[in-house]
Image (cartoon, rainbow, N blue to C red; front, side):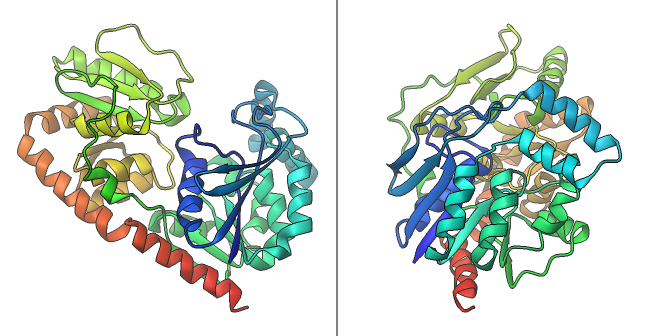
Length: 389
């Protein structure tokens, strides 16, 4: 079969979020199908500047076709406009202007979808939020699968998204929490649906990762991996971890990923940078606790990878998806206040038996729900539902 993926950015260097999720699914699917990724030339989601060259390249067996964006994003102007539109009466035209200002704004990508959609057996759109999905679904609705990667945020309540969720022939939800939220928010009637998520390569975590070259810190440490950004809860994480140190905690905090905010110059906070896959796995394996501070998540691959490795997770209570992972797996704790963070960290670090038991629970949870065999069977069923007409 010929399968297209539509996503706002795509590349080996883009880790985390819906883009990384899309790449993992596309690479797995490319082993069995002819797969094209239709995307923009953007590498940076702040400006959507065209950094990758236009045209087609092969990435891990996937054909990636890039189109240049027509404009970059002025993030300050966009944030100001967003603040206005979220709090004031406005028109449909105002929302379309907001969508264009948000970016990526890529008419060439939409023209390609309009011209070529019928040549694919399925067109899989990743994340509900951006213009390539909002406008691209209109052009390929009859063979579309939407992977919403949605959570409760101001943007999702704009009127333009009410139509978005009526269009796809099939929907692949990430979690039961996301599905319940979307069903309560929108009138949806897809021909097929399933709660799918993303796979975790369990074999990867059973192989030795000792060939990496990154330096693992001495002593116990908490690890965060992903975009280091206030929007991911990292500013609060630093504040709460400082309170833990003031309470006599011996551990350090390590952050790995793209740094989009300053970090304090203190000995108990370490920035590990953008790591190779081998070094990233070594760091995950060595951590005592994986901390996931984001208040908004639709899945959290970091959480699932931590569980697959047998590590306990410490999550933000405000992220319903993370709390649901912890409760269903019995493999993590969650916090909403500084004191809860401090006490949870002390508890986990002081009780190795508890960490081991939670780690085993997490491994069972990931194996049952997020092994690649489970995930790909669900995608096969959704695609088969499309092709049955």
